[in-house]
Image 1 (cartoon, rainbow, N blue to C red):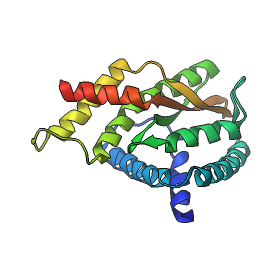
Image 2: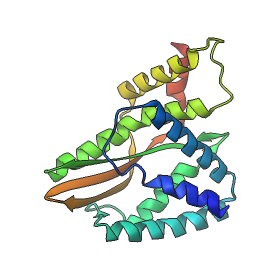
Image 3: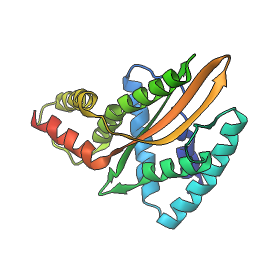
Image 4: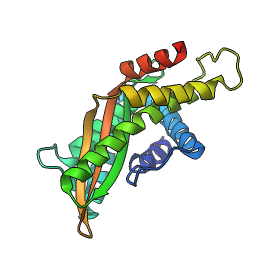
Length: 203
C-alpha cells in the first residue's frame, strides 16, 4: 500500500512543466496514472484522507522551498493540495467524479502567466477524458479496429470546443529570472465529461 501511494504521489507534480503537444507516450502515461488512481480509490476513505493529508503537507513544504507561493486570495497551499488530491481520487462506478489536470506557464507579466496556465490546464481536460476512455473495458467501439482512436479524437475535439467552466483547485506561482511562473490545477465535472463521451459516441 505504501508503494502504491508513493507511486501515485510521484505523478502529482509531473505536470509542473511547459505544456507539450499530445503524443502517444503522453496518453500511455495518463493511462498508467489513471490505473493507479483506480487502485487508490479502492482504499477506505479513512486511509485515503490520512495519506492525502500527509502527502499534501510534504508537497507544500517542498514547493515552498522551491520558491512557490499561494496566489493572492487563494487558500493555503497545503489545503489546496489536499482538495486537489481528494478530487483526483474520487470515483463512482469506476469513473472519476472530477477530471483533474494541471499545467504551468511562464510569462514576464503575472496576469499573462496565470491566464496561460489556466488555459493550458483547461485544454488538458480533453486529453484526460480521452485517457479515461482508453482505460475503460466497458465501452463498445462498433467492431471497427480503428474506431477507438476515432472516438478519442472526437472526444478531444468536442472537449476543446465545449469546455468552459472548470474549477481552479490549485493556484501557485513563483518568480524565476525576472519572469512569473504559474502552476494551476483545475477540476471538471465527471458528469459533464460523460456527456462529452456520449456526444462523441453518437456522432
